[in-house]
Image (cartoon, rainbow over all chains, first blue to last red; front, side):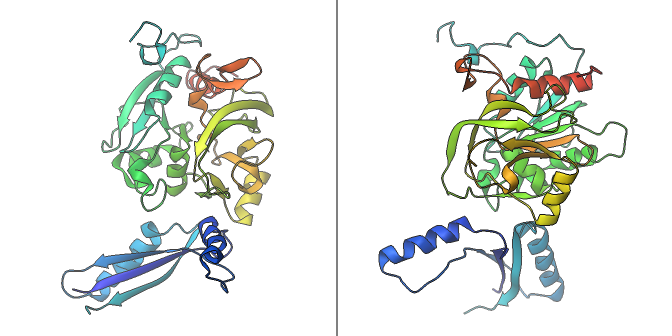
Length: 84
Length: 258
């Protein structure tokens, strides 16, 4: 069964307090060499049957209108992942 | 239970002049916490509180609406993002944006403010506090706009103290929106003293262009009754600065002049 993946990230100009806290914590576990972290969201929309262009358009609309808030977030991608 | 537990006793005695029937709806979403406190604040302010249910499109003829604080839908997706699509919200959005002489007054407190931004009734949005901690404390605010339905009985630049408790309280908006809000005097409440959460321009609450919709992060409904309010100069828990929000809207609805 295919899945539509929607990825949402905080806008570049919006401070990401969670990402900042993670970036600060990484060196404590020895993970050095990362100068920054930004934390986003990934949604997996399961589809029964085939992903039609219509369904993909509907996913894009859902991503823009509900899964993200355009004031603070960008929809980075809406893609189809086929079964493994 | 002794007789000394007035918080859960019957209707409190209104402190404002008896009204003339201002009916103010208080919405309950799944996960709302402060609806009972908000209803009590409405009654103390001289209004009649009418419970409204998220799944019911009807506003049952109320004259104004309060969206109280809490964690509607567990803050899933984003704070307020799912509540915004509740049936009751479609009606509230339509009536709040109605091009009539007196569109529906709506107040969003904390999570209610988040719902109003998600519903695009107010600009901007809230992200996590810059320090990432849940905060719970009394907060001093400056009332910078007394022209709204909810603030008419404050004096300009009056300082008030009300409780504040949230994790996603950092107000953000793009520069153009912030400039517009400032130029049009639509910042209603501003944090005084050290910023509690990193909000842009220390904004604690804003209004829409017509002044009928107001949202703020702190909790005026928790400072409406001496003995159970915020700490202030008059003593511990004695502060009742939040009550003026509720007397203001009752006054606006009943034709009173501030």
